[in-house]
Length: 590
Image 1 (spheres, rainbow, N blue to C red):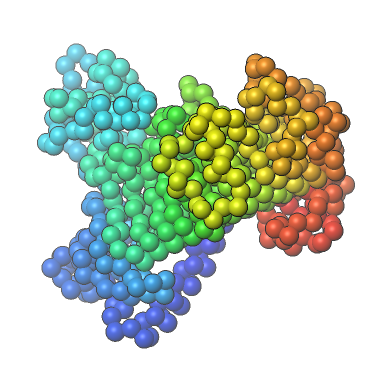
Image 2: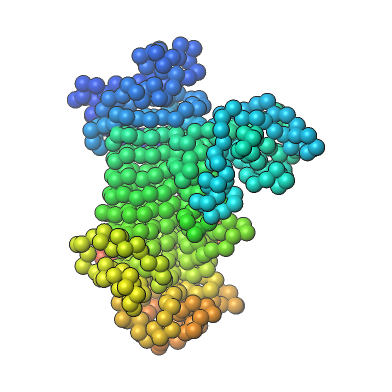
C-alpha cells in the first residue's frame, strides 16, 4: 500500500510539471498542437484532422502526423493495435507526448477477442477453435528459454486472466491451453470447465505494442498489455524517451526495454512473462515504479528472468525509490559491465524462485560490474542474498536494512568467463584492475575474487543462513587474507532473534573444502580482522514482518554508524546528522 501511494503521489506531481512544461514550450513553438484520439466518438475516423470534434480513431493515425512539441490526448477505450512513432521531439524541453486522458483508461492491447469454440470430442471441458493465422513454431521458444513452458509465444486470456500453456493435448487440465501449431488449432480448458463462448477469450497476436523510432517521446498514463514477442518487449523506447504513470503488463517476454537518457517514473510493471524490463543504456533514471509478479511463464535464471535486469547500465544512471516484490527471480539485477550507478531507497522483497524451481534469487544482484553506490535500501524475505556482489568491484554498500533473506549480504567469486572480445571493450579509463582480472582468467591463470568493495552501516537481522557470505572457491584463500581483497566491512549491526540462529559470516561454498561458518561476531573479527566497530545487538525494528523497519527508542543501531560523505540522508529523505549516523536505512535517532 505504501508503494502504491508513493507512485500516485509521484504521478500527480509530474502531471503538474508536464502541464507547466507544455505551456512554456508551446509559448515559443509554431507547432505544439493538441491532437485527439477517441475511438468511442461517433465521428471518429483516421481520415479526420484529429481535433476534439473530429478525432482520430487509432493512436497509430495520430502518431503518423505528430511534430516536435505536439501532445496527443487519447480518450478511454481498448485500442487493439501496435503503435510505431517515427517522429520525436528535439530534446528534453520539446517532446512528442502521448497522454491517456484520463490516466489508465486508455488500453493498448496486443490481443484480439476470439469466439467460435466447439467442444473437443471425447474430452469433457476441453474446447477447440481453428485459427485463421499461423502459430509460432513450438521449438522457437523452447530452445531459447530453457523451459518447457514457453513453446508458443501467443498466449490465451480468459476474462483478463491467463491460462497456463501445456505441451500436449493430453496435459490439458483446468486452467490450461494447448496450441497445436501444425494443425493451427487452439485448445482451451477453462478453470471451471465452462464453455469459453460464455467468456471473453483473448489471444495475443501482436509482437510489440509501442515502438519509438525517434528520440524524446513521452508515453503517459496508458495500460499496455498482451504483447506476444519472443524475448521482445511491449514498449521499446528510444533515446530520451519518458514512460510516466503507465501500467505495463501481461507481456509474453519483457515489459519494456531501455535506452540512453530515458526516464521511467511512476509506472507499474506487473505480470510479465519473463521480466518487468530488460536492457541498458547511459544516464537512465528508473524511479518510483512498482515491479511485481513478473516471470509468471517460468523462465529460468540460467538465462534471465525476474523483476528488472539491466545490462551495460552506466554513466550516472539512478535506480531509486522503487517497490520490487513477488517476482519469480531476482528483484533488481545488474549484469554485464554496468558501471557508475546509484541504487538507493528501494524496497526489494519477497523475490523467490517459481514453485518447483530452485535458485537463490537475490533482492539486489550486481554481477560483473563496478562503481556502484547501493544505499538506504530495504531488502527482505528474498530467497537469495538481500544484496549480492558477484565478481564486481569498487562498490559501496552503505546503510541498508536486510531482514529475513537467505543471506543478508554476499560477495561471490564468479566463475563464468567473459568472451574474449568483451575484454577489449572494458572502459579504458578504469583505474581499477578489472580488465587485468578478466585477462588473467582468460589465460587460465589465477585471479582474485571480488575486491575493492565496502560494506558499512548495514543492518542485518534474522537472515536465514548467514548475515554475510563470502563465496570464494579457492580453499587456500582464508579469512585472514580478506584484507588482500581490499574488502571493507565495518560499523554494521548483526542480530538474530530466533533460538536457532544463523552464523554471522559464512566463508566458501557449502560442502566444499575450506567452508567455514563463524557463529559469533567475535570469532569473525578474530579470523578476519574486519568488522572491528560492528555491533551485535537488538536493532529494535518496529514491525519487520509488516514491512516497518524504523528503529524503536533504545535500538542498538542508533548513533552507532559511521559518518559517510555518500550517505547524507536516509530512506525517507531525513538528513543524517554528522557524527550521529544510525545503522540501517532509517535515521530515527539524533
